[in-house]
Length: 231
Image (cartoon, rainbow, N blue to C red; front, side, top):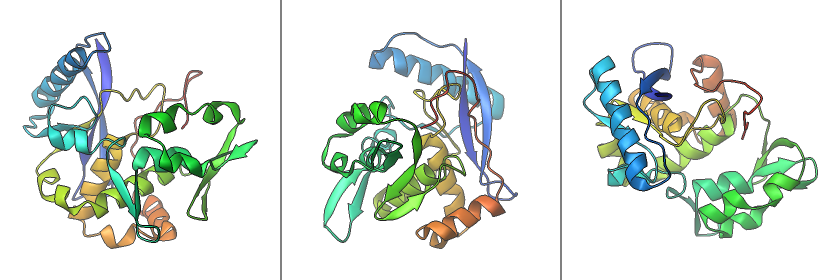
């Protein structure tokens, strides 16, 4: 058995996202088939526990095209000034600033997989912040920069919005809250909540976005331990 979070957009209370840990039968293995078996088990457990019929897995292993399209590896950001596009993953990795290097903006032209595995991200010392389009971000609030980047990318992709709003909760089978913090499924749930609360006008400006973290308590799933990879 294993536990993974499901992220439930909130429309009528002080939270944007409610995070619930769900226990399910995990199928070991790295193949897509094994991952999808685990997704099915997780979604069955969510349905039994909460009664949700519309659950979306956000990852390249998702059985639904929408879930695959919303993976940070696939979701694209359009840069209006340069007319270029790049994935959320490339934008995130290229924005990391370390004690001994960064931001490595050349990663914007890499593939998502290449950007995530670039050796400089592991050999440049301690992560100290982010810089994206000459705007600097601190490490706290945790997940703020990643969430801002993701929800703004999604806001550009209006063709995905109508179908997305049909779902009640979101998962990411690859995300283990004991090892990582940023989660694309959490960012999705945040976007849906912001849309339902008519707050998407507050997401583009970083300062306005950070105000949302003061107004709405954050309900994340990460757990600190010696194996935690912060970003």
